Image 1: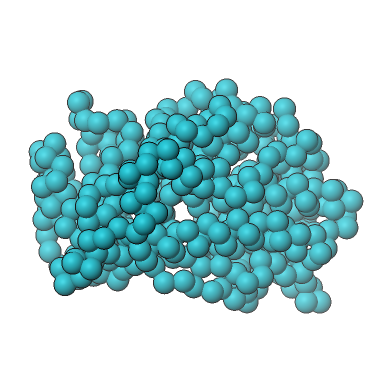
Image 2 (image 1 turned 120 degrees about the vertical axis):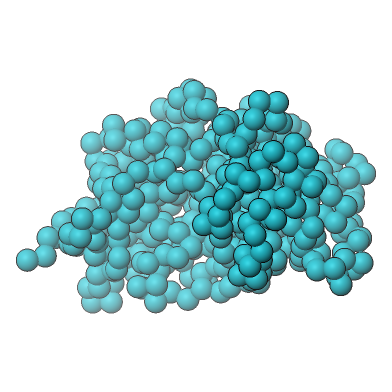
Amino acid sequence: MTNVERTTCLVAGGGPAGMVLGLLLARAGVAVTVLEKHADFLRDFRGDTVHPTTLDLLDELGLGDEFAKLPQSRLERAQLPTRQGMVPFGDFTQLPGKHNYVAMVPQWDLLDLLADAAKQEPSFTLRMETEAVGVIWDHGRVAGVEYRTTAGATGQILADLTIAADGRHSALRAAAGMKVRDYPTPMDVWWFRLPRRTGDPAGAVGVMSQARAVIMLDRDDYWQTAVLIRKGSDAAQRKEPVSSMVAGIAEVVPWLTDRVDTVSSWDDVKLLDVRVDRLSRWYTDGLLCIGDAAHAMSPVGGVGINLAVQDAVAAATLLAAPLVNGTVSTRDLAKVQRRRLLPTVITQGVQRFLHARVLKPALAGKVEIARAAKLPVPVRMMTRFPKLRRIPAYVVGRGFRPEHAPPFARR
């Protein structure tokens, strides 16, 4: 016999968007259940950027002091990889307000903080090792989800509203038959670890090697290393020894020379298939997609997490009252998309411009290098006039239409 449970709002996915939404709705008194398919939040290659708008949100939620205790570093300036090397692009120190930097924090620490805060609310439930694998239909309306646990148990959770916050490969989005528009990207990303030694630089380090841009994130005792490669070139490049790839980085970062052999196998190098896509309609009756489930972002600027959190705040602000009153409708879901669509379109537009005009030439093969020599005018202006760097810093750090915690969630 199928185990059937019930909640008011079911959130699939325990990432930043799902956890923020669960916390906010619980503080409004909504019975909310969040499903996370893993046993914990420990993931090597989650994004670690916490932008100024998210830092402001944590303050508004009364979590700023606890967040400040987490191990972290600060990113105060952004660079772009080009054929001329790493070019200064954004200066977060010129932003107004308390948080004029991007905090680099292991995402599992942030998620644990949000989970601990949400668990203090009596209407909040977090189910770990439980994955939403399909939707339940009732007369053409999504009425909840089917789930499967790590141990193999299955069941159903009925809900007035289901939120798909389960990422760019959303199972619920696929089950609901929602159509996604893909945009071309020039790159994929390799992720791996390199040891960090005493005397290494701190924070984030960016370098440009032959047809590869490298971004290294300080994780205290190791570097979380991201290597941007030409789209679709992963299989061909893996035919070479992995040590050759690391040695190529060490050629332009000499202090890594003693670590070339620490990546012993291509199995240690994970591939991120970079996607930029967007649903034309983020909702259907009974189901709303937010974050990467609604719009996958490029790693450029590290803005995907910030956009997902902003979606969650907007959704909680607009949907809490209808959920409490039992009146939530597709009209309410459409309001969420209308509120968040323009920031999404603009941000993806900026990313696509940088893909085409900066990153594609930077990652070009030798035949295309000559055509890649000249930087776009906006990038050259940022290099020549440092004060202009506050513009991309604002776009990346605060974005378009930043959201604030609704009154019912503030502490």
